[in-house]
Image (cartoon, rainbow, N blue to C red; front, side, top):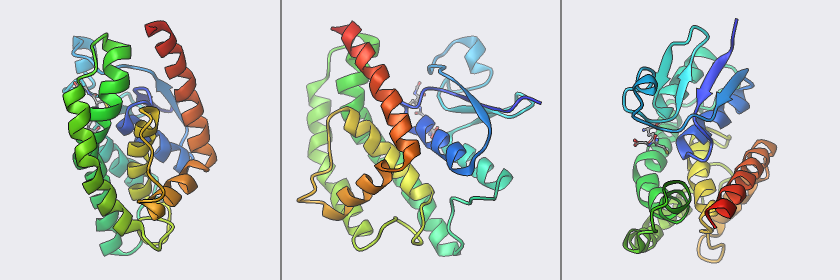
Length: 221
Ligand SMILES: N[C@@H](CCC(=O)N[C@@H](CS)C(=O)NCC(=O)O)C(=O)O
């Protein structure tokens, strides 16, 4: 029987989230570097043309990283990435939502999207107004997250969870765009991210992404 197939490159914060969940849970899978597109063939498995898509062993698609995360948690409850406590579970899902729907659209798309993805993959110039808007909004996100992580190793329940994965995926993209957490202003958040980045699976994924980006940027001149 074939294993699960993840579609999309991990440069996408949402694909990276799913990849890290698969790795944390030790789930056998393969990965295709499928880009998002409106190609009719791709729309058959991704109605919105977005990545990630996860295909199960029967080739049935599951869309949206949060729904995939939930599916993986229910199907593979071992090595759970959600805390035991019901309130903490809600908090973990909140941080996932905060990263995915609040921070990424402003900071990831504003900085990584404009500085790397648009010029290197679409030959579009960086929209400096979008970058400036992202930079202006960054403190409100960072201040909130600094308060939430202060005095803790992980965001929720004293355990590595979906909350850490989702937020780390945001900061991975930002680091590609040369935006780093200022350790003087946000010491707890910076220490948390360093701790996460020291994990071998992050080292491996980021090394692959950096090598790929270096190649693409070289070609783009
Ligand atoms: N809520 C979705 C967001 C996925 C998403 O926006 N993916 C981007 C890549 S980072 C995409 O496929 N964009 C193509 C498009 O919007 O057409 C999820 O969590 O999977």
